[in-house]
Length: 148
Image 1 (cartoon, rainbow, N blue to C red):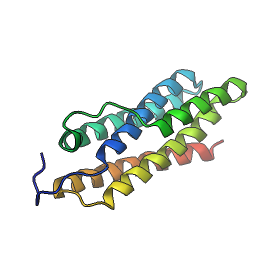
Image 2 (image 1 turned 120 degrees about the vertical axis):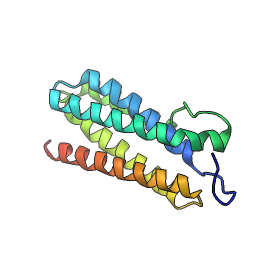
Image 3 (image 1 turned 90 degrees about the horizontal axis):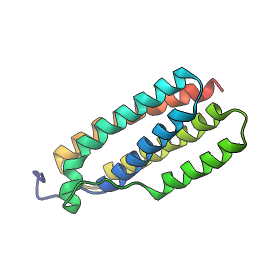
Image 4 (image 1 turned 180 degrees about the horizontal axis):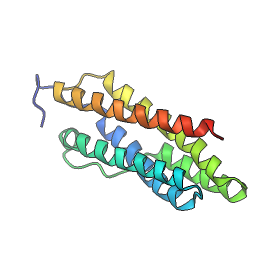
């Protein structure tokens, strides 16, 4: 899918790995939270990530020759930490919201890192759209965190 100036997409698989971990983390957290509003928020985050991952997959295929279905160790480690904390916490919803807001930060960091690298024009446009989506998710998660 590399269509512009012979450039290859850069850092796309890293973004997808972080998003895949985020999807998994949100799905597991969604099963644990008690507040239906938080569960609905987590579903919106899952849906936004799934759409974003699919929009970036063509560039991952271009980058490595196949779909990226892996996950990021940094996010997996955070999930394990959150799971441990939640076992000892009386307020699990707050723990999950706090930790997932940090997952949003990590996702934004990865997208911005990719945008600072040379990308084909079509990949740049896809990254810009994904950035707007994830910034919106981050804002929504930050608002939820302020409620706690």
